Length: 210
Image 1 (tube, rainbow, N blue to C red):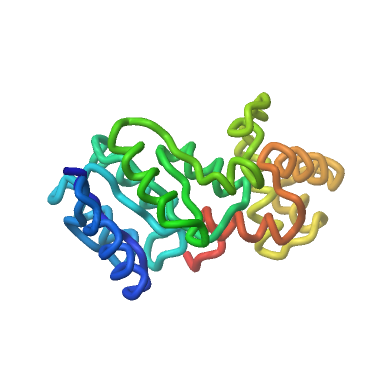
Image 2 (image 1 turned 180 degrees about the vertical axis):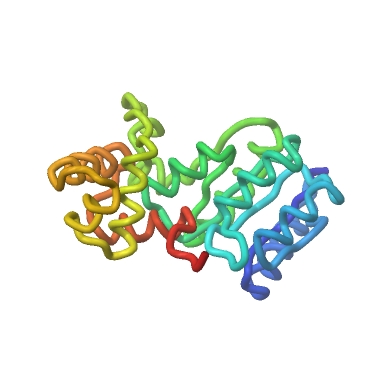
């Protein structure tokens, strides 16, 4: 029996998922959480085989929760369940240790397949992600190198609304250097424009109040 922890801030979504999972002969829901912090706290207590995490949750989003669960309960596999198909989201969740990535708009069988695969120590990516917005490494092409700390800092400041000139002054570098860092970071993270940068910043928690 696969023991599943559900984490989603919408109660109606959790209820629907619980009915779906408990209706399977080989899995059952052993715990629920409405935010990332609650999910992480339950892992050492419940020791679920698989944690199904929404990405957009209060207090701690799915990415931060995935990283924390890898520390708190490394035996618990993680499946991200989200409406976001952005390549950067897929890449970041996989890097954080997620075994599965499923879109909420996909058929319920995608989630069930991902949970079963994760419980076996395997990975599962939503078919729509693999054929559409998956990062290069997932689609089988050579992966781009990771963005450097300086490149990520430039993106963070950009997402917060700072101009290239302001970023250059803050980091004590030339404006041209800022432009190069920005271009390199967006290429490595497969971000298509400012909207993608802002969504990526939200995922990383860069836009939250200190």
